[in-house]
Amino acid sequence: MSNSIQTIIILYASQSGTSEYLSNQLYENLKSKLSSLTIKCDSIENFEQYLSQSYLQHPTLYLFVISTSLEGSPPSSMSDFSDYTSTQKAISVFTSPNFEYSIFGNGNSNYEDTYQQASRQFKELLKSKFNRNPLIECREGDQSEGNVEVECEEWETDIINYFKSLE
Ligand SMILES: Cc1cc2nc3c(=O)[nH]c(=O)nc-3n(C[C@H](O)[C@H](O)[C@H](O)COP(=O)(O)O)c2cc1C
Image 1 (cartoon, helix red, strand yellow):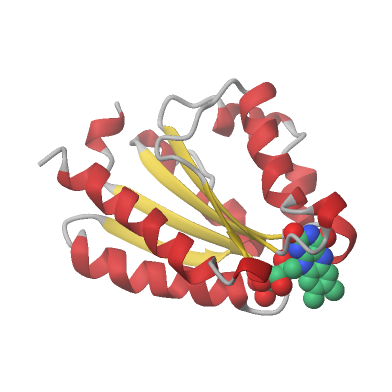
Image 2: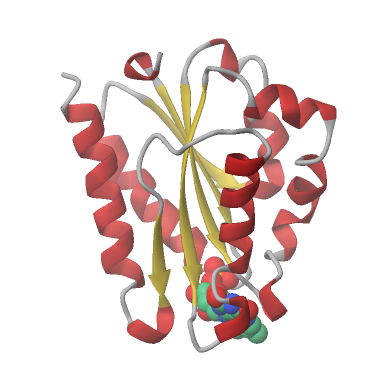
């Protein structure tokens, strides 16, 4: 299934703009390097528009870019999505054979106990509850290591290489 992906949807959860910025850069770069695909980029607030059966009639790759915020919580823009993950609708989306995903986590390891908590919780949910593995290896950027942009660029390279390898 996954080799016929025609659509990539980037959904970002950002509190103060870093993940939004990374997502917009990713969007521009993927559009120019994977020009035959349909690519969209939006805040995770608008998830319902994209996690829909109309998109999932065909294999679709969802790229989640998720920051961890205060005390390990997800950004406020992700709260409706977090509620949604325990609904019946979400079960049909996350178990759809056309749902493919990867996750980029954005955090700061100075917050030792809650480092990357928001992205890791979502990753764990997809694995343990829905038995789904990422199509492309998930990556994380650590602000305290100053490697957020580099890691995100590596992730972008992995994504591009995946599609180029199918050509
Ligand atoms: C008030 C505050 C609390 C934070 N708490 C955490 C945390 O618990 N765990 C973590 O990994 N990063 C934490 N961070 C780091 C953010 O994830 C990091 O700054 C990220 O780049 C913010 O992304 P955003 O601009 O997309 O919201 C925190 C940052 C701030 C400003």
